Length: 291
Image 1 (cartoon, rainbow, N blue to C red):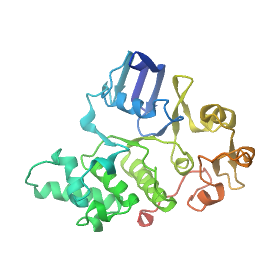
Image 2 (cartoon, one colour):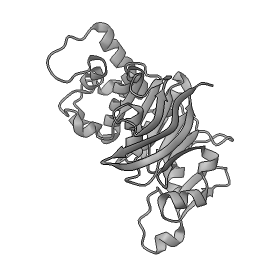
Image 3 (cartoon, rainbow, N blue to C red):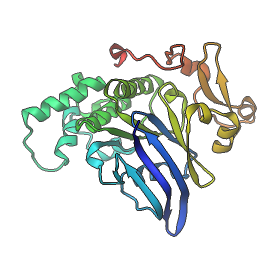
Image 4 (tube, helix red, strand yellow):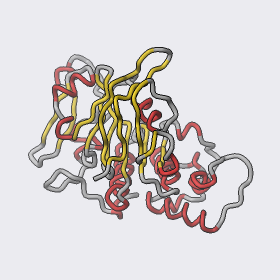
């Protein structure tokens, strides 16, 4: 399988200070990858480097076979600040159409083909019936799915999302993850997600880039789900719990909780209610369940 993203001794700096360096790894086409690490380690910066928005201090990065930034017309991007940046008076359909017209200013005629494409994207993520509603009328989870539809409307080969599950309730997180699962399985879209809490994403992740000690590393999920590694990564004691059914969850150590630490991850039993697995630990996603 071809590589979608390749880092070759890449480094990035801001204000003369190296954010991270010696990044050498590749991410396969068709994979679902998380970028993980504590706040301030450069997770969003890595995604911006891949989009060519931040220059490298050393090395090189190629995305979809081109130097970073050259293939952005084949990339769908959902920033963490999407709901803050976009005009909440726009309807869901108008927002999705921005992925085709490329501007939110002025009056631009919309062709029948463009409107059909927008409706197709909204149908895929399950918000077609909300087309005429304003973003201000939608829940956070629905707005996030509208954002994904806007990114999908140009048929990207790579979808990049910065903290797409942040500030969403569990039901909304579950719906977004189901959409990502379908995109990867049915359309073969390569997906990369900046994430802090891994639990809800575990069933669909194939690997993770983790930023540790100033260096980016890539590993398959079986290697990332290691209590010692995650404890070092997050700076607090973490355990990987395996249920009798074979499902895995990342959870703070019980001793940390008794010491008064606030857990960064969802409660295992709570998340378990929203996970459907087969005997391989992969998630079943029924299109009818996406609501």
